[in-house]
Amino acid sequence: MTTPPPGLRERKKRATREALREAALRLAVEHGPDRVRVEDIAEAAGVSPRTYNNYFASREQAIVAAVTADRETRIAAAVAARPAGTRLADAVSEAVIEQYTNPGERERQALLLIATGTALRDAFLDAAAGIEAPLTVVVAERLTDAGVQTARVLAASVAAAVRIALEGWLRSSAGAPGVSGADGAAEAAGAGGPAESLGAGGLVVPSGSLPDLLRAAMAPLAPAFDAAEGRGGP
Amino acid sequence: MTTPPPGLRERKKRATREALREAALRLAVEHGPDRVRVEDIAEAAGVSPRTYNNYFASREQAIVAAVTADRETRIAAAVAARPAGTRLADAVSEAVIEQYTNPGERERQALLLIATGTALRDAFLDAAAGIEAPLTVVVAERLTDAGVQTARVLAASVAAAVRIALEGWLRSSAGAPGVSGADGAAEAAGAGGPAESLGAGGLVVPSGSLPDLLRAAMAPLAPAFDAAEGRGGP
DNA sequence: GCGCAAACTTGCGTGCACGCACTTTTATTG
DNA sequence: CAATAAAAGTGCGTGCACGCAAGTTTGCGC
Image: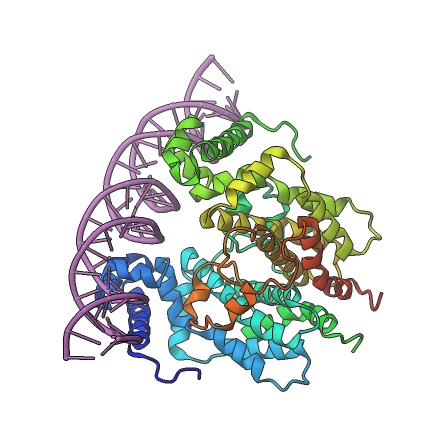
């Protein structure tokens, strides 16, 4: 029903994607992230440069994908796997933390690489937004009463919280610009006054462990989940 | 204290930015969004093409900025203007709706233009994320007990809710791809099954008015704001 | 007024994203 | 198994984002 035979066509696609991912990561580690051209990655994967962009929309996405892989769908699956009676807020929170808790050695090396430059960092944070769509599906399943729109908002809020936690986690040696991790649009406003003072002052958890940061970031959303589930107080 | 004299340098910058914005919008309306090159916009604003990118990171940003302008900072100001006793959730919600409720004729024309293509739509939604930083500041002011991290998450959630509302609002004639409006990262997951069925079924508010959509999108977050404020039940 | 330092602009060059048209490969149907 | 449809890969051309290293303007202290 799900995948009778995966189909030869599909296998080739996945193989190509994985080849590109790994080639991108390997070359980036070997020569430094800025000294790798798309042409090199494509060649290392045995494919045309043009084909590269059929798989990844930006150069950084390929590198980041080597770490991200299909984390999003696994999070959704992990949420769906929790028993039906559990508090949705807990189910989501634990599923997310569980999937972001990896002692993988290769991933740690990749993350070190990602933390070096702004471009890769942004791509990594953008990739984290990928959990929104799968999360919306599973959340909507449990919130049949509240409507799809509520599920959308809650899933997006979780994605935002994850992004914030990751931002805080990556903020170690490099000076992060400000509060928001969004693209240049914020700068266009020209306000640029008090935001820095917030970003600069490290009042909150200088650099705690990632699970703790994730838990702390998602905690404020729990009441919203409870209300959507119909749980009044406790 | 805020702006003793704005300074001649700053005035020129703002003038250049505005010239670029308006030139971009005018040319896009005249010749269609895809038939305007950066070179044309720069020339119309009397500036070098290279300088254009010193003000806007992408071609679409300039066009969108003509509508967005400094809406973000006005939202923050509107929140700060509410009396201190009001429920924070209401203050934020009303401030946002207030700033997105404009019967401006020129803006309506621009939004019609924006809705035509995918690129402009995405840029517009991205620009909406610009409210996050200013919102974080004002929310953090009122939530001194809960900590800055909570303010960050709540502000980001509001920004996400606004994005979702705008997505739903723009979904009229053009077929939107799915649930998430994020960039191509979601597609990389390969899940792509149930998400479409959610996006396709227009169960929730076929195309209500924007204020209603915004209100509905932000409503699920109200319990989170209440809890952060220390308000137990009501 | 004078000159200095910082900020803004600009030309140039590089790599990249992506539309279009075309070839090659895979899947399906009679 | 052949014919045909669908989909992925590829070459090419265009416009764009952005780093770098000048050139130019603005602000400020003397």
